[in-house]
Length: 284
Image (cartoon, rainbow, N blue to C red; front, side, top):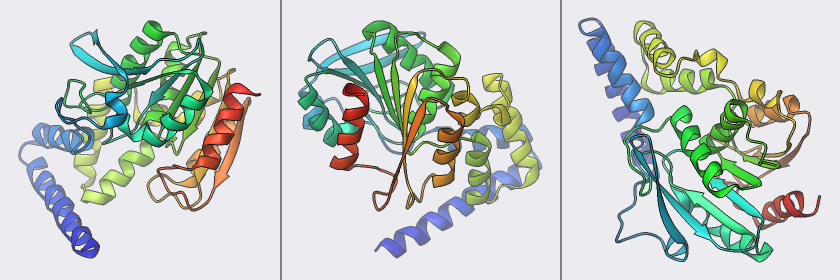
């Protein structure tokens, strides 16, 4: 069954790429918009209000309005120590379920959000600059001392701190996060076999959309400017984000420590790792 799913996914992605490539010769702008859409619109991660996971039902719900977006937040009340959790691509706040159960032992207040176009938050498109705006809205509202991000959520945390540099944050934990946006784009190009013309148009679309060239979007460059304490964890068996990207972020971040794991994959769900994060946040 898994092999059939892989074959179906391969056929689908290559078909999309072929369609976009053919369109680029006749309607180049439409081809770029379509390529951008497939890169930024999550296929999974949305939640129905009447069918949310039990872990989220246990939290206090609050919707923050920011610009034209509504941001769904969840709070598990505790003491004055506050931790903000930032999930990744095609996910929502419930991905933290195992970790939340562990963190609640610390008696700290835990806050999580659904990213743009995911969970119960509004929107269709998921992108890091927009996500960082949502994170900033939560930091200003809840004033957390600690922030933890997984995968694209980790990349968002790096960009967020580089752009906003809110002094309330004391420590940051990054789990399985990509560093270089150009690598993400290059992998996308290979996955759906975009031709060079379409890929160039897509790159220009990103630069126009965010006023930032993909080559300038670098987690290791952002981290090299940080003074706050950091912890980066990455698994050698991560088949989504290269282990080397996590290592590069750690090498650039002078006040950060690096944890190498094995056998946890991209999700990094593990009680021993949770313990190490807990020590980093509350005992060091």
